[in-house]
Length: 359
Image 1 (cartoon, rainbow, N blue to C red):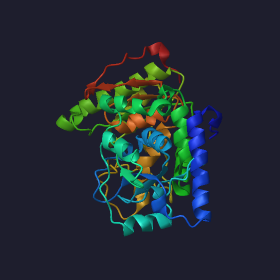
Image 2 (cartoon, helix red, strand yellow):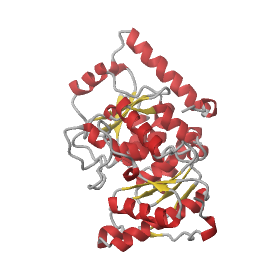
Image 3 (cartoon, helix red, strand yellow):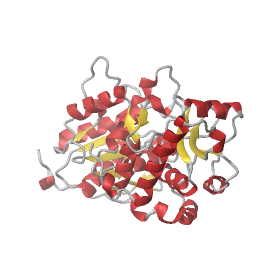
Image 4 (tube, rainbow, N blue to C red):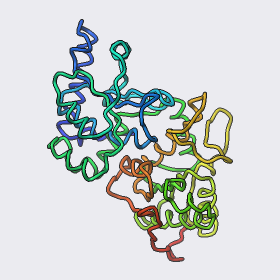
């Protein structure tokens, strides 16, 4: 994907350049890490990490804090695996913790991460604390938004509009080769082209969701179809829809609707299974990163696969939870989205007219 680096804010370009230069200087010198200033987004065994979106959606805030306080930003995961099992540093930022820094951190004893934005902000501004680690899940709350005003231009409004977030995400994270292969296989077999499809996400098992409370197949079907209607309403009738969901029944309902209506709706269940391609299960619901237990990290590829595909869409239909919202922000146009769920209940979108259908 071609990144529009020229469109990055000035402060961000300067930070990425400073980060690269600083790492090079540390490698070439005898400096110790305790003489540096470091900020780490952390998820270790006993940390409260949450799911995929909980761990990654705070990227803009960590970037802004690191730039404002002149700290080197890294990602440090161990639960259930290192982030590098799924994503690698992209061309904009080398966020992998250097081996000697890991040794230094462990030699000083693990400290609990900051889990509140106000505490994290206070710690990063403390010049006597060389290492600050955090895992922030509350980034979308009004209280946090007001706190971020202190960071001034680093949190420019357009960070959450247009395709800037898309370029930042894809410039900082790239799939590992195995996951990249799966992504290309799925996109090719579903005939999906980046920026030429609409994404939809339905988290049926999100706490408080009607399906989770009732296990009603009718609710599952109706909510899934409404998510598709909301995708058509925001993205138009000319584009296919990719649906990601945590329940196989939602994908099956979307497939049946597609056959009956003529609208092109696809998901991973439409992809031919092939040896050596770790695709999502056809008979089990999607795993959740916070609760998954597996001895093979490729079994969690489906989690990141859906996020990456959502991040390649042009518009999005999103419901409960942060996963779909993160995918929408990472898309080619973070401003082009529709809510198919509000307050954990369906937000009805217009039913497409028959003359909309295009085979």
